[in-house]
Length: 104
Image (tube, rainbow, N blue to C red; front, side, top):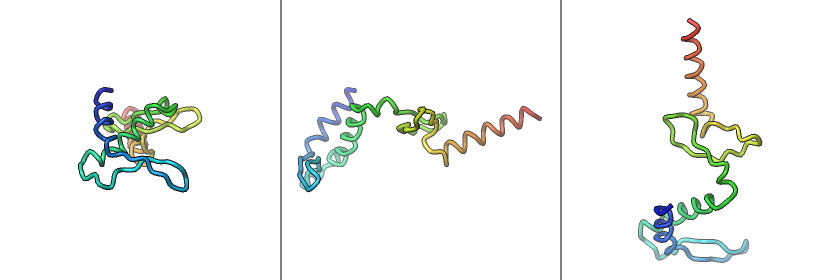
């Protein structure tokens, strides 16, 4: 938590409140040229997630070699992998091969 607070304090210096036809929004100061300015949207997004009800649906991928995080938006909170096409398929293939080896 302290690391996130520290990064937020550094990054928020470059945020400016702007208005457009949709209302108010945070933008990065056009004069900012430091690397910390690039982190501002990332830190803001992380804090927005952490303070929202969606945080309860944050999950880590079920593949032990993957460190991906995702928001489980299924009705019954049953999603297990960051991406079905990569980690999900890999885990299903591993399970199938393990069952086939045991059957022999």
